[in-house]
Image (cartoon, rainbow, N blue to C red; front, top):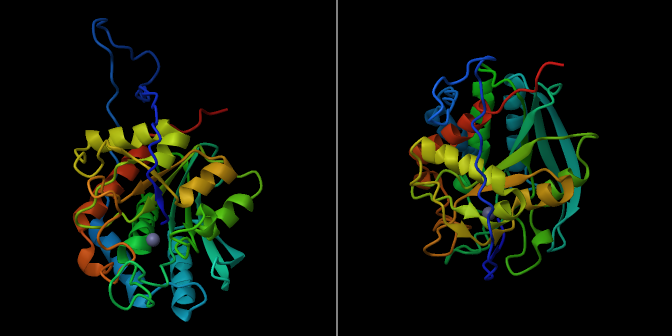
Length: 332
Ligand SMILES: [Zn+2]
């Protein structure tokens, strides 16, 4: 996660009124004409936050997932096998990159597809690498962080969603992309020093690949999490922000998914928007009061003690609710 550009850019949002997608059979029109008919939302299957929690624990147990280390390689194998075990069609893209500090690495972007033949599809992504140094800490600043929240949480929620859709078909296609090399950027430098895995994937994605929209999860497991409407998401994909935040409000998660609009974050969704031209949003922990990411950010305190099952459950529930209320393409 990179720098927040809190410039005083005023973002005008076109408020989009999302029509409730109709699941009704033809002819089932409301009889009264005095009210607007709203179709009940499809109830999504339950998200298991205990399971998601164990997926974070497993990643943390490997050790810091710093590109080029054996811990990183071991975690990549585990995640790949996990997605395969849920029946996804999985491929691993090797991405040769050079970080801003001159270090070279071979990244692994892990891409799992559910019903790749389906036209209507949603892309879910999270970065799985962890920051190689605790540069925002006051101690051991050159040592890597556990990355329970920053790295671990997004992956864990997506693995849990993969487990669930293996048993409950949402009726649309779904892709889960675990991107590498997000978190070795230059805090004072250019946006392009961050998110090397997603930059590579967006510019070398599978031929003809399309998705209707994308949701990025980053730092979605802290006990004091707050997810404002993030500026890059609002700039590129305000309708998707509206869709997700109103789903959250409907489900009673307005305490996490707040309506403040904050400055633009450099995160993987920026490059999915810019290079893959897929409208992409970021659900990312950012405290609008402190104008900063969480207290754990790029510190050794980003460990299991900071992880909260309630937060994981809220995010998982919202994403599943959105997925299960997308409409499959009409039969040809
Ligand atoms: Zn980070």
